[in-house]
Image (cartoon, rainbow, N blue to C red):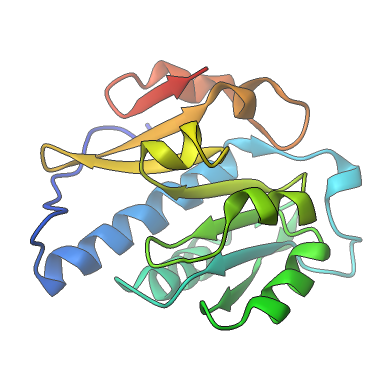
Length: 184
């Protein structure tokens, strides 16, 4: 099904090819997560506006390009509308803050990001926050994180992302025990 199986990835001491593969895996997982997430109509843009994914941090691993390609090829949307991707480097804090005040549907923190997820959450309470590592969930109060261990990519998901009203992940994802870990 969607996130079936684990993908072998060498996270530490990875070559540039490995890093690009990591970016592609993250982008692929994120497209599946979009399909498994529901937003209240109040948390979606008007029909004349595009839903947004805000990416924070300096470009790395080809993630942004892979995500753009996958969204274009698959036709995946949010609320029936095509998704717009906005990418802000670490030095673009004023522009990034303005984008977050416009309530994007997803905020993705690249591993190079120096943005503070807790502060960003204050600007955009109803966005799905995605990042890297267990700490992103346990300490920084993110929703979903990619974790790399034993040459595998796993998703760590905050239980809140499964139980709140919006954005809410479909509980079906919690059944994928080999790929997903739920943290209370």
